View (cartoon, rainbow, N blue to C red):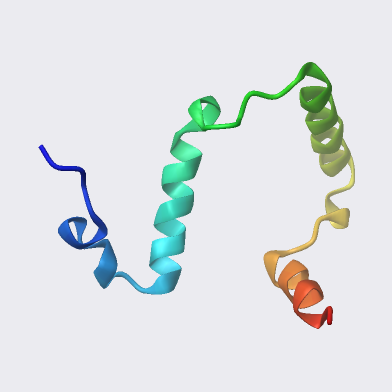
Amino acid sequence: MASPTMKRLGIDRLSPEEQIALAMEIWDSLGYDRPGSQLTSEQRQELARRDAEMDANPDIALTWEQVRASIEKKP
């Protein structure tokens, strides 16, 4: 059986936003099986610290729109 392609799966007919959403859903579905997702214990501890900080201070989070606007302002 040939590998799936965007055209055969109909992905090429999706809007760019839908394609990105699908790509993110596929990426998220890989969980810890993602390539390069083997974290060191220090990295796991840092992620846990950041997660706890977000739980304690949810107002420090930025929306995607805020992040994107900040990036687009840079020369």
